[in-house]
Image (cartoon, rainbow, N blue to C red; front, side, top):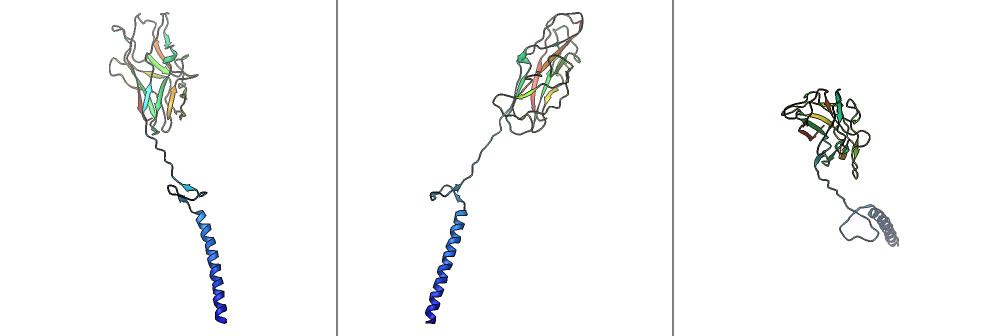
Length: 222
């Protein structure tokens, strides 16, 4: 009799142990993540990894096609700005995603008719104004339409006096960006502060058409 009762008692304990164990296993099972890609039961979530690859694009400059000035002699020295709105801005596209920054440089040859020249050191100036050659403001920068850009941090000092030369002229930075700025498509010289291209015409300048070869270059890095 004692042996029979002991057997039944152990049997009950085993059933209880099995019940408790099953409950623990069920709870642990619902907490485990299931990887997607295999057949899983309805109502059971699975996990997967989403990956986005972004490749480096280009760094490009779209500049004016020409610059032009015109004036009539007045007997006094004149400061003449290019009045064409299309010439008062340029577009920088930084699609590299590097955050390296960039800067824009200008070179210009001597303004000359072929026989008469204007001074190299004082003739050509750029700033962020079409009303004053002496303005110390930078041209306004704005994100181009459709571009969520990081606006540039410009450290260039204005106005920028561009010294010309008959050949191999020096390069002058007219706009720059700090690292991690200037990302996206950005218009320089839009809105309240356009790019002002200025030419100084001394009162004793002879009549004629003066030309200069002007080069704009976009360079990676601040």
